[in-house]
Image (tube, rainbow over all chains, first blue to last red):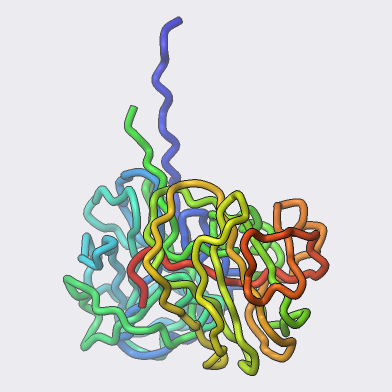
Length: 174
Length: 173
């Protein structure tokens, strides 16, 4: 009997609430619009990708107020920057803001999704999971001079009860 | 066909994807603080380590009270103790508490994360899951077992209490 190749199932979207997210057990409850905790503070959230996959977009679910700029990026397990969008105007209002990035193969293994915002006026959908619980699953933060993500992250203990609705797209979202 | 290699979480915990109660804990709304149910009670939760890991620390998350002492351990599938933190005073409310252990290499397979507390005043984060649900997924308890005796002598869970505790398997801040 001939063996037929089986197409690997690569998820179209990996969210902070997806099985690949280490934060998932803490990202529970109702996501609601909340103010970004500190200007130019970047948060890093760990994911375990079971296989290599192309990432084409990153996204954040934006809340009831927009201001200034944001940036998103992906880091590997050694905290090296793999890809970032670059400084982008925060525009979406109660909607998903998709950021097109250069298609980048990431995984398998540990990756971090990073999000930074330039101000404390912007709002994003988030659950207010305690900082201790977020730290317990490996999330961390870094305070930056602006929204440019560092080539190597320098982790600090996460201090904000802020788990935003973020994710990465392997397929394509309209 | 490419090889899909298993990967473990940064922190293998009683609530992570390596735990059979991962989905149930999420459905129950995630962990919240509650007082330890019984002095010197030890609670054991199975986890499946998917890939070889080196464990350097064990930990838990304190909630609003840190009066008592905690002992954490890892047991193998034969219920023999692999490593433990030993008698540790809980410190720091609403904070992660990590305890260094002798570096311990674990091969893929079934293990048990065990947590015991010598009082009922300390409040730690736990998942509020029915005792029958804990039992059906392989959790058990042992009364008067703060010292985490080896081998463990399992008894059916008697409390709706799955402590949130974990082993650190990678870079951690």
